[in-house]
Amino acid sequence: MKSELLKFGLIGLVAVLLQMLIFNHLSYGAIQADITLVALIWVMATQDRTRAILFAAFVGLLSDFFLDYWGLHLMAKPLTTMIVYRFVPRMEETRLFFTPVFLILLGISVVHNFFFLLAALFAQIYQAEPVLIQILAGSSLMTAITGSIIYILRDN
Image (cartoon, rainbow, N blue to C red):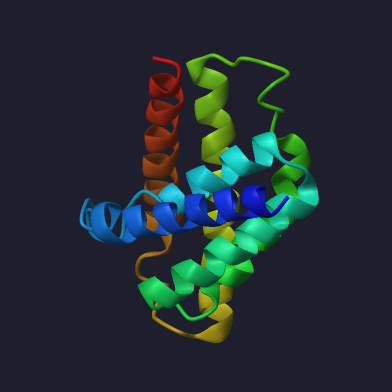
């Protein structure tokens, strides 16, 4: 149990560090892929709901700590996990093709970015209105593409 928690903690830390060191620099304006969300979707596909929500809270806290969003990820990631958990297919049950994986990632990413922007608008932490469509559509699309590529390369 402790080794499994440590494993998921390290996966979350590596995902946040990848986001901070690589994917924040691979952006176009406000559009960037969210690799922590891809890791969270993988945890949702392989673990039970409680572990997925705890992982989402941990990754959200680390993301807020390292990326200076102050509570936005901590609110958006667990809320997204609670809502979309039942729609994520179990990884050991099915092997999906590219298109369903892409559409699932796109849908979850749109939901996550909607909650992220809703929290940003509610808290008035930063001006999210000018980049609303860029974040909602562009970042969701880039996250879905990145996650689909990782899914394809995972078995090779």
